[in-house]
Every structure is written in C-alpha cells, then in structure tokens.
Length: 152
Image 1 (cartoon, helix red, strand yellow):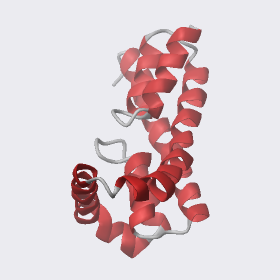
Image 2 (cartoon, one colour):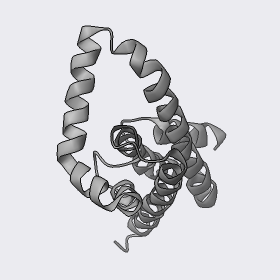
Image 3 (tube, helix red, strand yellow):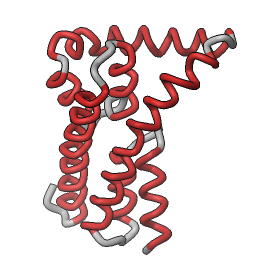
Image 4 (cartoon, helix red, strand yellow):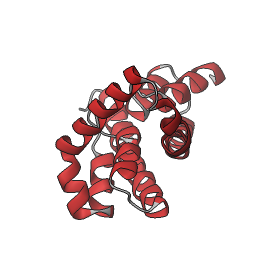
C-alpha cells in the first residue's frame, strides 16, 4: 500500500498527469481512498512553489541556451493564447477556474506558468492554485470512486 501511495504521489507531482492521474492510480491499486486523496492533493500543491522557484531562478539562467529559449517562448505563447485572456481578465477567479478544470493542459503547472507570465501576486496565485487543485482532485477522486463502483 505504501508503495502504491508513493507512486500515486509521484504521478501527482509529474507534469504528465498531476493528481488527475495520481488519484485514479492510487484508487485502482487498492490504497486507502482517503489517504490517496490527501497525499495526492498535497503532492500536487507542492508543484506550485517548485515551479515558481524554477521560473524565477533557474529559468532566467536557462534562457541563455537557445533551444531552451525557443521551447520557453513556444510554451509562453501557447499559455497566453490558450486561456491567457480569461486569466488576465478575471485574475484570481480565472486562475482558480483554469486550474480546477480536470482536463489535459490545465492544472498547477499551467497555473504556475500563467502566474509567472501575467505577474499575478504569488500569495493570491498560491491560494487560487491550491483551491483549484482541491476541487479538481475532488472531482477526479469522486468520479473515480463512482466508476470503480460501476455507478458512473
């Protein structure tokens, strides 16, 4: 059970799925349903400070390397055209709703990038990301439990 919980947490930290993958993995593997929710949620929340550290400290150094710079510009343009106008217009609530949607391309990684690009205050952005992650995790957790019981 501990091994499955650790793997679920690693999925929740991963940019390849976040808690949207970690929670279903943990539930399907047979771990305690409440522990899966709590640990995957907390692991996903941990991404925001890590991403902000990366974007503010390491990103500036890596921008000197041309292939990285091209990739960073591509990601920034996609972030701004995807839902940037809504996040910029609605600020806190736009960011919260964007992170809350349990869809590919939304989540705390994209929310952190939006925070950095649109220069949203870190404290407000952390709260918006955390609340968004909570509701996203709750939706995924509840839907996965219902699906496993054959209801959904």
